[in-house]
Structures are given as C-alpha cells and as structure tokens.
Image (cartoon, rainbow, N blue to C red; front, side, top):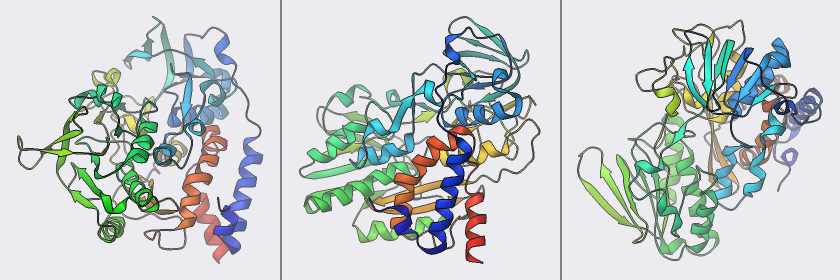
Length: 441
C-alpha cells in the first residue's frame, strides 16, 4: 500500500502528519473498559442508548464534560464494528477481522456499560426499560440506536444466503459471501440493488458494483459480465456534481443502470431476482444472475417505532440544527435512527457529535461524507450539506477519482475512527480545512 505521505505531497503531507501526531498524543493509549463488571446504578446524568459509532463517540465526549461515573452506555452486543470498511471486505481488499473489536475495548474507561437491550423509552418520566427488567433514569438522554436491516422484507431472504452466488456488504454474516460470489463468477449477469427505503451509506450499493467491475477486468472476466445496477431511486446520486462524475464512469465502463426498480424477491435456488417497477406498481421483471449483491430494506429500530420520541415514520424526531428532540428538550438523537434530512454515514457522525453538548449551539449544517470507491485504488470523495451542495475539505476538485482519497478511505479513516473519533477527539473535517488553508496560504 502506498503510504499517505507519498500520495499527498508537499505541505499537505506535513499537515496530515502533524494531525496524526496531535491525535495520538491527545488520545493517549487505548484503555480496556472494566466498568461492566460491577452493578449498574439506576440513574445517570447522561444515558447513551447504543454502542455504535455515534453512541461511543458521544459517551467519550460526555465523559469529559460530566465525569465518567455519570455516564452509561446501554448496548447488548459483544463486538463493535467499523462498518464502512465492509465495502472493501466484500471486494477482497480488506479482511473482515480488521473491522471488529471487543465492545469492552471501545467503551470509554470508567463509563458504565449496561449490557442489555432497550425495550421501552419513557421520556415523560425520564427513564428507559431494558430486557433484563431494569428501569434506568437519566437527566439527559442520547439516542444512538442505529438503523434496522430488514432482509426478511424481500421474499426468499434471509434464507437465500445459504445458497451460493449471493451476498450483502451490509451484514457481518453476509459480507464475506459477496467476496465468494465475486471470486466464483464465471459468466452472466452481476446484479446490484438499492431498496425503496432509507439506507445507511447510500453510496455503498454502487461502490461494490465499481469494485466488481474492476475485479472482472483484473481477472479477465469483464467481457463475460453484464453488470446491472437496479435502484429504486430516480438518480445515481443526490448531489449533481458527483452524479455527473459517476454517470461518466458508468458510460465509460459500460454499466447498465435501471431506475425505479425495487428488489421484492430472490429465488436463490434458481439464481433469479424479481424486481418491481415503482413507476408501474404490480409490473415485475425476473432477472437471472450469476452474482447478486443485495442492499436490504432498512428502517428505524422496533423499539423506537411506537415510542413517544418518534415521528410518524418511526425515526427520532430532532431539530436538524441542534439534534435536540422537538418535544423533549433533554433528549438528543444522533446518527441513523434520526429523521435528519441527510445521508446516514459514519463520517457525518463525527461532525454531529461535535455539535451536541449539554449547552447546545445551532451549528450542524448537515455535513455528510461519502467516499465513493470506484476501483481498487480510486475514490471520489463526495462531501455535501443539507442542501445537497458540495462542502469539500481539500483544495482540489473532489469529483475526480484519486488514489490519495482511496488511501484515506482504506487506511487513514480507520485509523482516525479507532484512535480519535471513538475517543471523542474527532469532530469532522473542519480542522483539516483550516490546516490545508493555512498550509496553502
């Protein structure tokens, strides 16, 4: 792998190196969490629901504000995953083992880990209930419960994953099946899908398509592959600048994109996928596949759907500038479980968490980052705001495919995630913008 300093030259390299040194000095050595060994209290100053990227990052930030002993995280899982790297795992460029660590190692030292599942939220009484029959009260509640995958809403799944030729980069159980299907491809249709629901990392369904096309070229199978992207959306990407760049790649690489096509059934034993035409409800098309990558329908966690904190669609109902709940002022939402009008990505979480504090300022602009992987050594770094306007970090055109951005996606961002963001020291790319502007002046 080409080192970052060899890719980003001159003053930029020095600024990156400086940033990394500052980050490691500030973060300090990783400390193993030990708080789960003693009994949880029934009241906390700050209670965080969810141990994903948003929950852990907020727990680290709140620890510094109110003290570790006053913060708790409710999370049942034993392992924490850096899910953005699964795109590269599905393409054989990274190992699945590199994406996960024990949950105990990422929960901030001294913060209470309540190893349970949330079963009910009662914001009128400032408390929650868990599946081990505990009631826990709070002064401030941060909801970071993520998004729920619904493979079962596609007829034939998830049982269809027991068959070959089918995978999905959205689950730890199926991401390696994508790589197996890619390796086993011989000749025919390689089909990639995008569901008719909100999804986390909306670029991921097409990233694996570009990587698969690159793999077919590298292995001499490209002439035997008919690559199809069936998306329920009406456009390839929501920001015109990047959509134009992606359309050019699609044209150059002879990829087929069909819009308003929603996967409704997988007949894995016959290697057939059934799509409904959203413009003509009831009209379906059956496509035979040699490889199928499924992006599942997604939705808010079940516990939120009937909760007082949810909007009509089941998402946590928050102010888009403060992340504060619209009806309960001591409740905040972060990440995939909210109704924020922006893409659901881990990079956005870094900026969001820097916007939340016990004394809020209205400064969240909807910043979202989506590194669009277009090959094994190329990325278009899409960055944009609520208005779908580019909000770019670097002093060059980010709609161009670049090796430097691939290195950032594959190597720098995982480093920042584990060593800075989860420890509450990474608040998004604003610091990078300032450093680069200083370096260029």
